Length: 274
Length: 357
Ligand SMILES: Nc1ncnc2c1ncn2[C@@H]1O[C@H](COP(=O)(O)OP(=O)(O)OP(=O)(O)O)[C@@H](O)[C@H]1O
Ligand SMILES: [Mg+2]
Image (cartoon, rainbow over all chains, first blue to last red; front, side):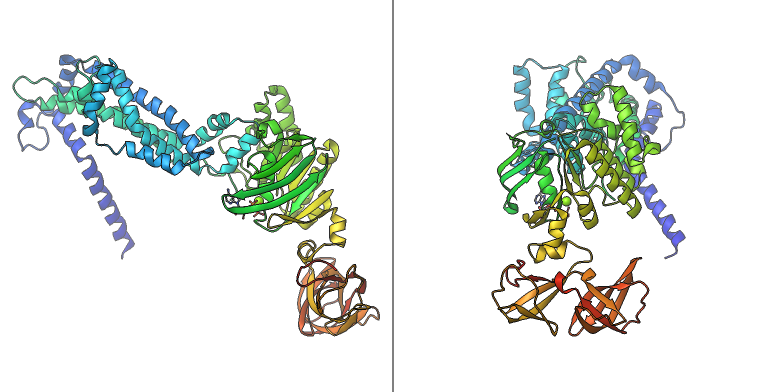
């Protein structure tokens, strides 16, 4: 085939894929700029009279900033906790002499196989018994539990990629296993750590079911629930919802672009022969 | 400085026995070398000494202390890894300073030590580079530097010069020898390089499948190889082996490719055939006739000049042999040459057990 043709085809396919993936987001963005009257009508496809009213109203009418704070704290704490526990567990599974490693990893994975809807009521009972209802901790603990399998699996694989002899060299150079872990293994797995952090953060930021069940006021309500419960007078405030969705997506996009290079970066190049 | 003693050591990975039984003492301050084919367990032995692999059975002593349960740090060993194992996220400087940092050495002293070692290994200009910005040989020298910056009880070196060019290798070899003579720290060394093993070691051990075939000074092993394996392994190019019929037992007389030969032996062969081993340097090939020892004719198959002389492959009757040729002689391929064997340099081996007779 003509190579020029190939390139054009490639880019066409790429453009289609991007459009397909970002379509909903684009639609949200367009909706958020439409005045209420235009929202439920097509045509026009694109807003005739663009407005920022919805953006103003979400910050005016609702405790939107508090909800964002809740989400930020919950997502950040979950990420931190998952990374700490997950990386230590992964280090043990990847490097130390532990028996039944495959069995443990399989068991860990099985935890994430329960559908959330099946676990939500027993978890609610536990949360209530602990007196954690409507607190950040209710969500942090739950989210950490559900994101740990992912964290452990990703990090175990990353730690395993690091040549054994590098770890051994650290031991010979005077490190205890734990020192070798945080001075050598962890910095070398930075791409894996960032990837895990981003995935866990996104999961916690977007989670809906548990957040809906365990929170009841703006003291701990997170963004997805907050948006879903936007009070409308007579009808669903689609414009406000769209504006809010766009606003809360921005931190994720920034996060991913900021860490993209770290995630892709191959830090281990040149560690061993060849 | 320590004496290392293995007592009845056995090492198996799951069901695979790598070292069936090792009984050996490496003396205090000695430069001891392990040589052997790939996969014979050399790296495994170093790892066991370092405390990176547990022994399956048996004990390891440093001096009179059992060290089986001590961590690498407590054993105080420095090691050069076969794959270098540099820390990719650290510069050359930080790599070499790392072991000192772990010992909480003052910064001023670290700076001085890195400077000194960097000039020994010739990497002073590259201290701020990262491993991935170095060539293989440079990386290997950093690995060496990271070990010799310390003054441990034992140095463990797993083929530390394998990736250097010929000139640098000879230079670094001399540096290692100087270092060892200055510090007298017990050094356990692994190499594939004959010349390296011979020139550095006080003693060496030839390993095959995890078992020591022979252990002794380089000269002992070269001059009195205990079996075919050792004889074939030490010396480069390797020894020629010929199957010979025994013509008479008392006194011994064998038939080496048509020659009657009565070599000195320590024990009589059992069967009616033996294996004769002759090093290439003891088979002299020439276009002229030299009346001495046994002499025969053959045809040249290949000439490999190495500088001051040439190695030459000849077809000699029904067999092929490698010999040595004066540089001035340039026989044509297929040309006729005289072959002379130094009679007193012929080794005889039992064909079944492989032991030298
Ligand atoms: N972790 C391991 N698990 C299973 N088998 C192993 C392990 N490490 C080494 N072996 C086996 O033990 C044997 C000895 O390995 P070792 O690395 O000591 O060889 P070596 O003499 O250093 O070889 P080379 O010259 O190629 O470096 C090999 O057959 C190898 O396959
Ligand atoms: Mg090896």
